[in-house]
Length: 336
Image (cartoon, rainbow, N blue to C red):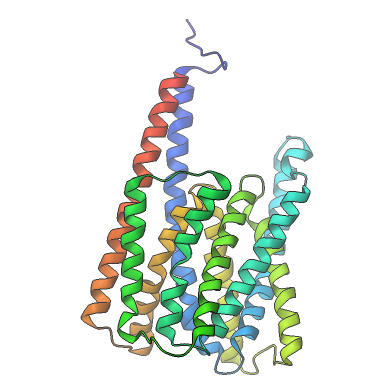
């Protein structure tokens, strides 16, 4: 006797679908970890690249070179889907709506402007001030997800986010300067806001489009914007030595293609707020990388702050896992 539900699938098939969703979360968590490592490498590579070119030029090179990579990735994925799938073309390549084009434009401009403002803020205020204010991004992301997209977050997640933000702020509190540099502070805060806008827009685009396609267009839009900035500043666009070229190529490969690419992939598995909180580990990873590469000293307060950040992220992760477990049980109860 076939024990089938109203949808036509057996109970065992429904349970298998739920288990497959759990496996996707595990893959997403691994991808998120790699993404954070890739993004954290940007600070080290940027220091090397800035010995020859400005941070604006380094960011332009990063986005333009990455756009080439995403072009071939998107083309190969599209060709593979067409030859291996019998699905209608409309399902393989979703129609680009006006709202989607607006989200793409907003994401590309927000990301490139965020990087530009952050780079400029470093010349107007202290690194500590810029880092502290830039770490406000998860607050903007969570508020935006709640106000604009009606997403809800558990108390445990919000507690974890608060603890992680407190730890991130503590990382640079020793070098905090409460004096000049208000323009730089405002630019760093605006960079955090625009970074949140970028994550929220890409999170919506991931519901319909594949990662390489999204990253191709956002990288192209961002590089076009930065090309205008470089033209206005009459700045040198490319490095002149092999070391400089290796640095910007690594920025494109590691920070943009691997880091931002996998981060975009994860936004279909996790909420924008969760991804934003996870990104608070980037200053920790960057500081450890600086310790290894440049011998920068870390105080006991830095290590304590790292522990607080990791504790907060752990609480946010466990809250996400608890919510996912409840959702899977609910699905099984409704479908079986």
